[in-house]
Image (cartoon, rainbow, N blue to C red; front, side, top):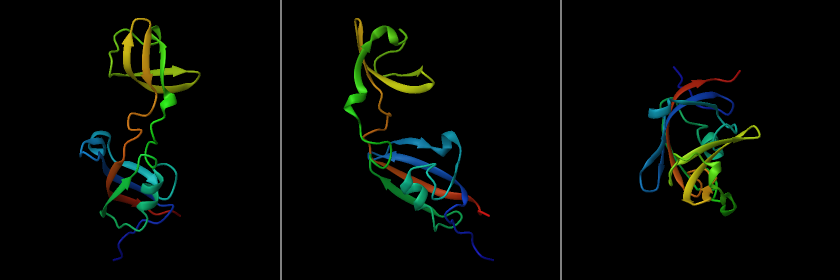
Length: 144
């Protein structure tokens, strides 16, 4: 019996935990279920998608991603003041609001609300953070 090994183009399913440097889990398959993607594709972070190639079924791996390789560096241009009325009144400082405009959806973190002005951060909540992606291959569907 030969063991299955992940090759580029295989459809695979993984269990995973994404952790910040301080150990906090920020994303996990225990919350969202296993993630399925094509090995070597752009469906997931490049270092992870390519990093699974060569793994065996049920093998685990830890892949360290810099902020640039994960959700990107924090962009100061995405922190801006807007009219306070653009945010529902029940949303408090530190909370995330989902905004739809022109067919796109953005998540804003409300940094400050003061009178007529609010300061929001439209960066991804994990922008600027290095993360450790700990995964285990739980299924391999060989490409044709």
